[in-house]
Length: 260
Image (cartoon, rainbow, N blue to C red):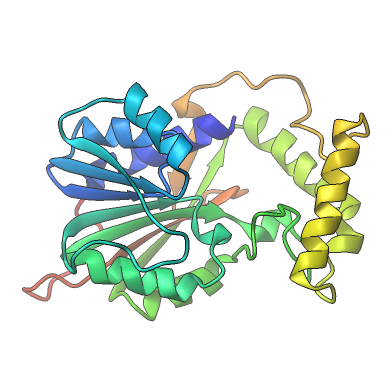
């Protein structure tokens, strides 16, 4: 199911990538970058994991697609105004200094360029006071909070959400509700970050020993295709937030909606 959601995000982004130079920030195993490379002029797909990038580079070989390693939390190793589009899918929730990354994304975007960002929706995953139950997420974001962060650096921000058919959404929402309660003692905001990570690691170990604290989606394996996912304004219930942030082009007009 996670792969299907990722594919839907890349499919949504295709219209922002045609004939453009694209930076895929946090590409993972590269299948999304390979899809975008079918329409883009050039795709630079970056990640912090050398092993994953080597696998992706061997699997997806295209003349206009290259994979590069970057350093975690470091400035992007690219010239200013060197990309038409930046894709950031399921990345910002892993970053300890999100504003530094947002500023770097703006720096490498050309005037008139777009950032397409996808991240989990904390409003359906967590209690309002709760820290993430995913131990690799320092923070998760609500819609208005993230819109305001992007609006501080970009002239236009369009907010959409990602939802889907009941066969997809209902099991995920059930899993979120269960995880909210089962991890609550160690995800209270009073604990230091290191204690939260340690506690969640212990719970993960219990799962591996047969105690299903972190169950998979209920209801059996999900059978669906891209038509099972919807990305639009107000899609509900929203598993993910989808934001399109745009730099003003040199003529001063707005192009955020032109690609749709």
